Length: 103
Ligand SMILES: [Zn+2]
Image (cartoon, rainbow, N blue to C red):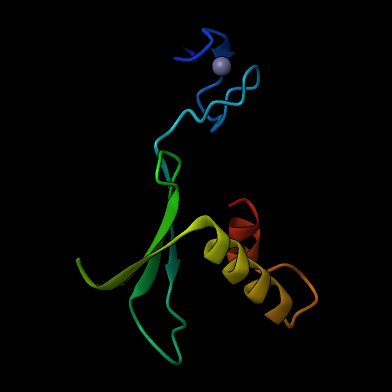
């Protein structure tokens, strides 16, 4: 268990936010999404920065190299999350929308 740098409260290692004061315990959260095997390759890395200016950086990867990247502000990130959530066709939340819902 770690100590929160803001309030000194105990924080379990897997917690992203302090349960006592809400302070982010990481500066960014990263998730990697594989490309669809039938229509593309590579993957999408989404890095959510919890420090100012808050933003989400989306980068397209092929092998070990980023091909393109863009940063979205929190409002556009939320709009993207709503778009993907509304586009889910299987009746269940997709992994992408579950991750983006936490943004
Ligand atoms: Zn705290």
